[in-house]
Image 1: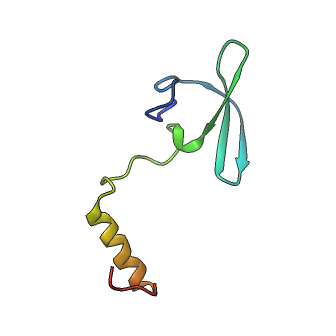
Image 2: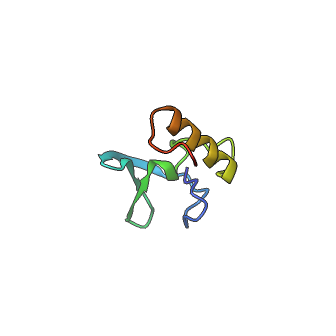
Length: 78
């Protein structure tokens, strides 16, 4: 199923014809109907990762910066 919020086929269930591995990850080539194929990034489908538990906010970015600093990042004054 296409889950990307801005994709014109959002909510549609398409037949997967084959899967390709590319540098960016898995790509699904699907039957788009009318004799055309549609290539979808895995993240744009229900086969990709689920939505994040929390939205990306300033507080979340501060937490990420703290983890990077703890892992040996050069800047600790974020």
